[in-house]
Length: 218
Image (cartoon, rainbow, N blue to C red; front, top):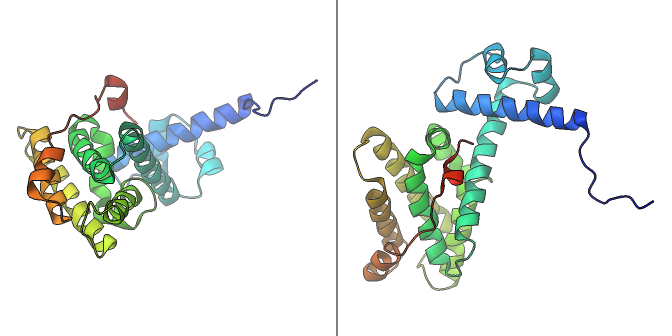
């Protein structure tokens, strides 16, 4: 009898996956709320799992929080890849990701709070936003779309602009997030060496629809 190359996870493995996901979700909510000093017991209670189950998956609260941040970054990065996957121009990929992230600060608030809470440390991360932005900046420079001598420095400036935008939108809830995101993106494109008129035109292009499934919690 032939054996399938894609074996289904066992009941035990599925239970482990659910437990880990519950712990990650609880940790993300604590990070977003700024409750970084919460004890492990409080986290496990929020996840509705036992203390023993916690230590089956993580050695410490710090390890859990690191995993929670990494998964939030991966989720955001995967979403950007999905939404910009049909674009060929690296400059438009970069601009669209920046504009979309600006819009998502309010529409995915828990994820956004995790990004803002970790701030500039995300520059050194190999997950999520930073590596994708660096990839797009380098591709844009290689294609002659950007005038960039130092991609790391360009990334630092772009990341600072994005984090500043996120904090501004959080602190000024009446500000138009789409207009603000597009204006900051336009300024960043100009910083990367793009002609002002073209930067403005790119930021007027339609974006993919952010349907309800994309706005659900992590």
